[in-house]
Length: 282
Image (tube, rainbow, N blue to C red):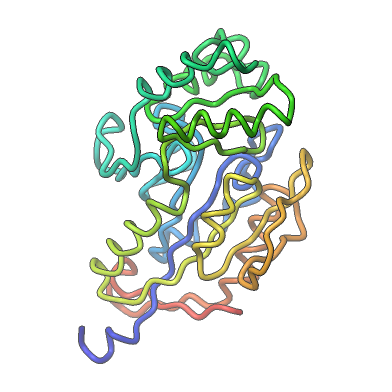
């Protein structure tokens, strides 16, 4: 690094989708449109970090003009926008077949129902998605969402059974997710290093999420916001001074948080992607 580059700071934003960038019920995101366009013009990547599948994101990325990297299935795989959705840049855990084999082995002990066993209509009813979108949500590559139908006491035994299989149980806003030993922070570390090398700069991160499955992502960021949800209270996170609770709900809270954090974005005469510097609060 040159002396100037060694002190340059570049901003990277990670965001959950459902209940955060997208409204929990309507999936509307119009409240964030102006901010997203401003960030794009200034070369600030907004990395989607979601429980959704790569298949679900194809049409949504076109609709929202999203051209940055994206992370799917709660940290399972990282995709770059110029590469096929069938070939992730990096994967961080086992495939769906291994997960299904483990779940099949415990079906007699616990009561649950996964996306694999649901019809498209059932997934649509459980998620609020239209049936074509629900069909895309069923195209799991690295994880399996469940509706938990057993007792809270049985969950501790279920956690142990999944751990014996090398799997993790993650509770989200709507479902229990079965996945490998990774979380939404795992690909963040890889991508932070990637951008630090690409930009030859210090990367500063902001993260936004609303659910239990976002905690690792929020804890890994320099500054983070819990976005209020109409469906559940914010998850409890202790001892994290960098995590704040947004005043607004869903996309409105997202817009308020980003507006309050990013109060100056400065570019020089060169390409914004190569020269963006930031000044942030907190």
